[in-house]
Image (cartoon, rainbow, N blue to C red; front, top):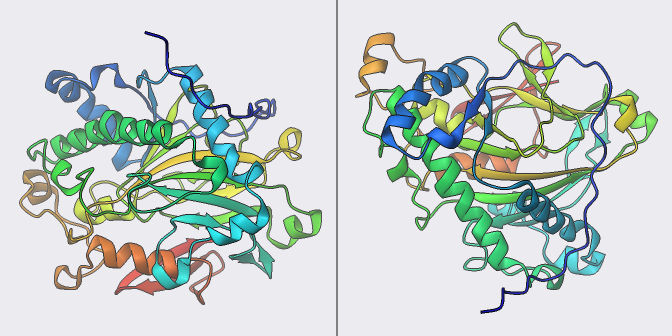
Length: 364
């Protein structure tokens, strides 16, 4: 039987990795070849849980996707930004403020970064079902089978083992978080293709080289496929900003607010930001591929107080349990407000807004 023919996609050529001596975050590296069995997950639990209690970030290696498959998804990821005409892009632009959903395009200059400087990033968001809940521009229409295979890989082979390990870390049954993240259940879990473009020197100066303010993610777990343009920084436990280093065919995983809420603060939604790349990469765009996981829409984001671990160590709440929003309420509120609502300045670094009774902080 002949092999199936895959549709043509222009080859995306990324920037070469930086040669600058940057201060890199010392993130743990987790070998996911062990994640397929209960015994392997038990062995990984101390490493993963320590990472999620301290940095809130980790690298994942040996995840099962080859470098060639990785390259192919980046080829597809670049199509929305290079092969879709401007008029068609407008037709598929998401009504982010009106719906609280990112499905479709987010155009450049929608958000204010600082001192009147607008963002220079575009992204195209695809619900994990790929075609069930949204249509796509003509240039992307040959690729849903590959994109769906990619979403299923992220969900089944990366997200679900992580959720099982995080449940183990709380001494809960492995399926605890799995039941909150059904692949076919109502949820806004999605793939994001995102592209940052270089900015003017004037904008860099006005915004202090920050491309996206320090923030925590909305959902439960974020899966980022490493790419070579260095721009991502995390705020480390000592308060310093350090760079996240690119490693070929590696996944960067971090915890979002919703998992912090569910775990009673045991796992940390780490503050991270995007800033201007180092000098030897400043002329290049930055293409990113993400899988943003959210719990099912009806999940209440309150601590799992029956966890034996939380009963021993205590619970760090960001809001009273009776005021807990659902995943759907919190996601829509955060999404609709981001970059388009007034922030309250708390001090020289921190700005704040309230979303469904939850204080959400941004770090300038």
